[in-house]
Length: 131
Image (cartoon, rainbow, N blue to C red; front, side, top):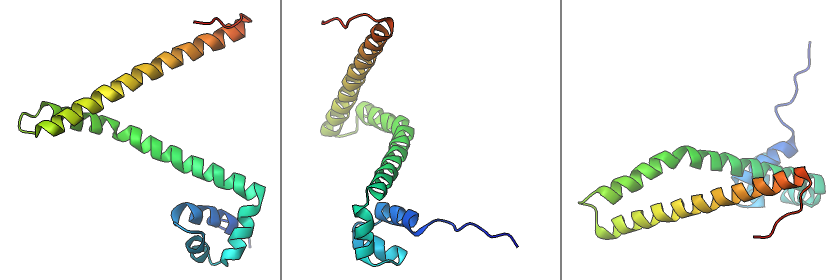
């Protein structure tokens, strides 16, 4: 009979629990280890690195969800902005939000262009020019 691999190690479950729970004690209880054991694992550089990577992955998943919701958010802001029945304060806040995001997107685009130019100059062996 073939051996089946465990679903996940206790330390992998600990990483998940640390992301899901608000305290180390709750995370330890969720996976059935003593809080001191979890505390010791958190002192281990490899475990710390794995936790940072898990947090980073969770963050980027959240960013992806925000990006997916962006079109709906823009539609909502535009609907408020153009609704003559909406309170003036709401329309002003919608207008401010739209202008703020548009400004930031232009600034980001400018930075991307400048970085691309610097990277191209570096590849071409040219010294960086000061603006």
